[in-house]
Length: 82
Image (cartoon, rainbow, N blue to C red):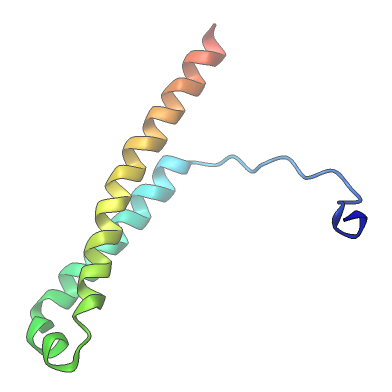
C-alpha cells in the first residue's frame, strides 16, 4: 500500500459563497424542469420521461442542499463568535 501513500500534504479546502452556488444550481435544475414540461408528451412517447423527473429531483435535492449549507454557515459563524 505504500504505492498509494500521498507524498505531499493535501491543500487547504477552498471556501467560497457556498449558499449562492447551491442556490444557483437549484435554480438551474428547476428551470430545466420547467423548460421540458411542455414537451411531456414527446418525452413519454420516446421513453425519455426520466429526463423530466431527474430535473425535478435535482431541484428538490437542491432545496435540501440550500437548507443544509445555510445551517452549516450559521454553525460556522456561531463557532467563530465564541
